[in-house]
Amino acid sequence: MAADDRLEDDQLARRLREAHRRVRLLPAADKERAARRYLSICDLAKRDPERAATRLDAFLSALDTPREGENTLGD
Image (cartoon, rainbow, N blue to C red):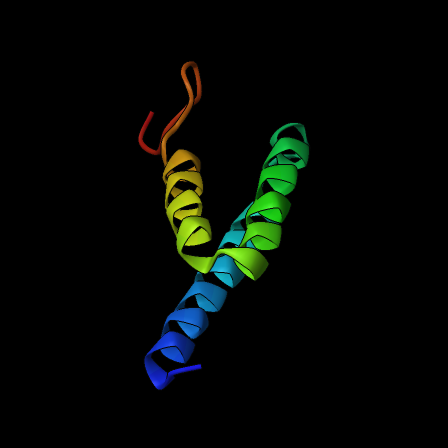
């Protein structure tokens, strides 16, 4: 494994840890589905880190986007 690959893996690992922290903070109603999606991304990271990083981007973006009818800060 090249040194550059290791740096990318470390970055992916940090981002996965951040996603895990954010999933833990979700309300119970949302946590189960998000946890399943997170685990599937972790499983994919073992086989295809590049694809997992792409899916992680989409997952984190979905966590950042409030769903319809959800209160946002300042409401």
